[in-house]
Length: 97
Image (tube, rainbow, N blue to C red):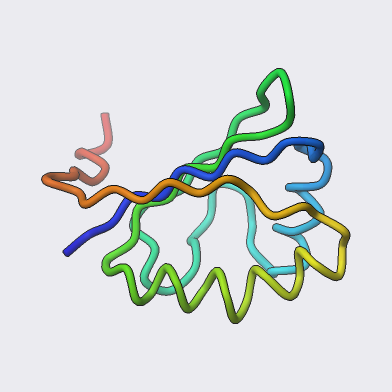
């Protein structure tokens, strides 16, 4: 079952996020992590909000614990408040206009 994750970072900003993306070797607007279906980020008054949709909870947990966690710790990024949701439905990009 697909899972959505909302991560609210307090005390870290979009510059910190960009550093993590660079360390992950990802390109803004490009493909994401294996198992990820969708990802977006926005600045907030107190930091940043990241929203991901994954194919499974196991893929999300593995990425956050084994890949993202160590990089974030190395860069001094505080752990976010994380909320998980079972996804009832999601849609992908439509045909090009």
